[in-house]
Image 1 (cartoon, rainbow, N blue to C red):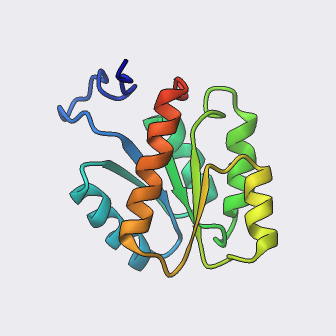
Image 2: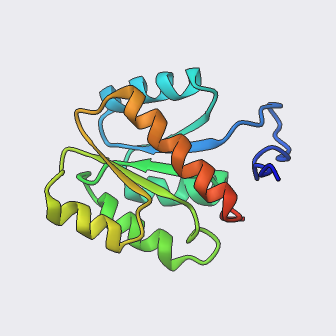
Length: 146
């Protein structure tokens, strides 16, 4: 039986129904190309510049997935992920870390925090899109975060 996407029935004021992804990175030169790439792939995009802005955006927009850098000023990606997992209404939101911090210890820590994936910078756009689609498909098959 086909899986029904949790975002297919969302009512949006802009009429769009694609998965909503929150991109969190302190560098606008990284956020902007990611935004263009993922919009072109049919995703709805929200942006945040640090971990605190991520949490605020999540409360407002309830994204289907968060694609987040680790090293950011203020609240870093690990800390933001910990806080996401503490909030019951956000805890099921998949997080993919997109970071230059690709050492084994960083990947292990992200996994321990419940990250759905880790993509190292510099990244292949095709690899990132594949990972996002893979995580969304698995998350949808398991009932999503709603």
